[in-house]
Length: 626
Image (cartoon, rainbow, N blue to C red; front, side, top):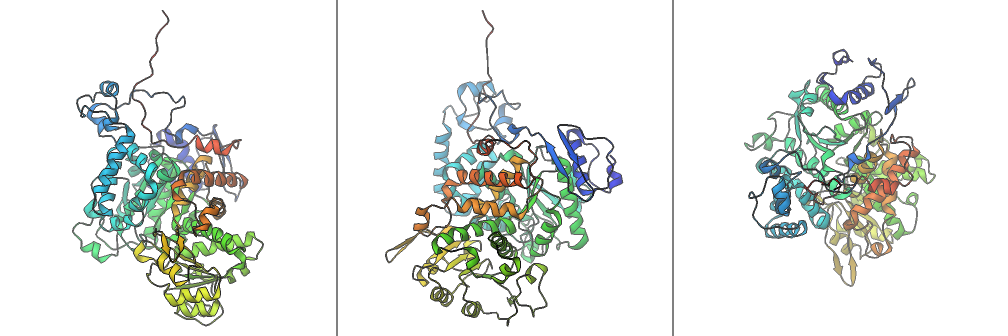
């Protein structure tokens, strides 16, 4: 194969072990390309004119797991001495036994005490308690991950519910704003607009060749904070930490990437501590060419089924890029599909309180960006599954953006908004919309705080016995209302969920534990399922399946305190349950490439899970017979 003939600049002709993956990636991107040699087992494919590629191959299942097949001790690691202690994937610190220290040449390089991993976790918790702010705790956890990866994830395993607001929203938003001053040690890849033509070579600089998932952002829309440019790297780093913390995906196979095309944030451009390109954002064909080369290069380097996770792209790019690549690439956009899935799961949980079907509800959305449009589309898909026509489902959805209610007389509507345009008078008043339409559910993802006002919630309560009120904007400072406000103003009748965590509510004899519609319930589990079965695509149907599976786990005890999501402390088991449902659906849709389908999907998934337990550095020994 001549990469020069394909015009795929930046893909090095030096394929090495990945020749087959390169051929497949090129075939995806260039369907008319003639390959120089035939593909041979264990991977085969057949293409019919106009059809998508179908793969059949065997997968080395142990590749996803950190556990050795026989559960016995591992061989001595390749590194030794101070190099081993400086490798976060190998370093165990003072948990190394005397025999291990002597074996790998670190005896004397550590204090003479011996501390178990559990005791190390206690020491870490003490350090965290001593930190005065959440940002200081975030910095400490980053440094822990940089020096001892297994201890970092062991700490998350045992205290995930407490630490998730630190490693991700809301603290990660502040961390991105200050990323220039916080930067200590590189984590992930930075690819700029000036690297076009050389992206494959940059990917080769990453030390791990068997990458299974790439989470990437261009930093244009970080949470509700807007353009953070290159400093948006905190988002893919945090997301991939949750891949492991929530779904036990081996961090070895996860790659965070920031695509730096500049920033339109004037404060960052003027900040001497800013770490990215000091230029305005590149748009148009040049931008699209960068994305195309990047995705093609990732397929070439890591295989055609590598998971490509779009994260925090601006509205003008997010839907367009997802639409462009979703039919030819194993990809998803968490801001659109992940948010939609977790919101739908909360709505399905709410239906057990309101005692009706989703098609019985009318929804008003404040905000018409990626999140709310994704939620609205998935709600419609669920209504269709219940037997309602798509056009009728669209009539159940009313949306407001920054310019007011989306109506047919407006001439500024994007393609994705037109479906929900109504034949009625426009207005910019949410209160007026609520009074006129009398919705049963109010969903906010507007990044505009204090917009679900007391009169609006009181109106929702007059019209509904149990109004559904979801304030999903992140971080907490951007939430449309607080849990306290929703419960108080509704006389404790609201079925409430939020995007950021709120404390327990206990007033006037009513006790509520508001559920957090955290995407971490969905995207790690979907990623785990897709990676385990080798799905070639990730259609919206998989996110509907994930939402349904998640809602099944909400207990009567959860509902009794108004929580429409299962407890986050059970996230590991939740992820296994959801991933099994996703894998089953992949096989039903003929998307899975791990064939034949395993008889016991749960056992199959559990065999892939990463363990944060330390592994022994003492090799297996044996003796000859006497």
